[in-house]
Image 1 (cartoon, each protein chain N blue to C red):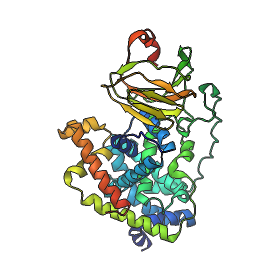
Image 2 (image 1 turned 30 degrees about the vertical axis):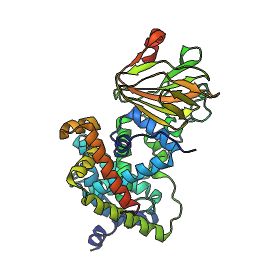
Image 3 (image 1 turned 60 degrees about the vertical axis):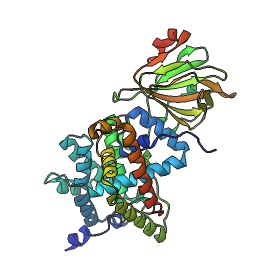
Amino acid sequence: MTLQHHPSELILTAYASGALADGPGLGVAMHLEHCAQCRAAVAAMEAVGGSLLDALDDAAMDGLALDQIMARIERPAPATRRAEPASDRRDLGIDVLPRALQGRRIGPRRFVAPNLWVAHVHSNKPDGWRTYLLHAAPGQGLLEHGHKGAELTTVLTGAFRDETGVYCAGDFIECDSEVEHRPMVEGDQACLCLITAEGSVEVRGLGRLLQPYLQV
Amino acid sequence: MELDAQANADPGALIVAVARERSRASFAALFSRFAPKVKSYLIKQGCRPEQAEELAQETLLTVWRKAEYFDPSKAGASTWIFTIARNLRIDALRRERRPDDLLDDPALRPVEAASADSVVVAAEREGQLRIALRSLPEEQAEVIRLSFFSDKPHSEISLQLGLPLGTVKSRLRLAMARLRAALEDRA
């Protein structure tokens, strides 16, 4: 199935150039695992990066750098440690984590309603974004909320619907601070999303009571 | 002298020589050509000079160790080296992935045998891209350069240029459309 919702050109360019913050980069990487069209766009942008690199003025290397590197290549490469087997996180509701999430530290699930939990995805470098997984059972309404900053959502499994449309696995949704929405799980499968939000989330109505839990 | 001949050689061919023959002369030529550019890129991205020096060394060391993963039918030498440098910088910032996880780097996946044809086609594509880059209107070229060579978000780029974000977006979109057309031979 062709995906309907893609990262903007701005976001893809920032990703390809290496300038995108860690959390948003994770969401883009997961979208790319689903989307050949955006992979091709990123490959084109990387080619632009290569051409620009070629055209840069040189920054002189240390006088000994060439000697040092010629000595280093004679030494054997450090033995490759096999990556440790991913910790068993079937509690997250998916058998195989997307590549982009493998090796990431993911905090424990915290239930904010009987059918709704969030789990913090750690970023070692504070980047001003909060990144978390959100899982909701079929039929569950997510909290009606607004944003102070941008919010990026990548759907991992299942689907959800809000005032603007239906979003399926692989879709990448960008909301700015203008948007207020009331998302709802679509279909009979649970929905798991990666959400990266800048600034804080403002919950409306009764959900306001749950506000402290959302500051993951 | 052998090194002089190497210095003018096609960098993609140099990487292939490193992969196939472990050619030290080819590697030295690659290092002399690309390490100062990678260092320059990293400084523009906000690295301190000594960190940029170290990461530029690491980038070229990765080129030596992983040369067999270079696929000249998919990307040019400078594109491949650009992605390695970019990813090493991200890892240095993050330090969550260990260096061994480089094996997971998409730039470093095994290469399927490519036909000579597809290699020539890829090299031509990148040549067209370079021409297209040079012929971009300056206002678009500036947005592209700032997008790639500063670690600032686009909102700051728009402030820096004194332009509305929408204008930055549309210049970027126009520029990327032209560049992709060149890459895909629709120019």
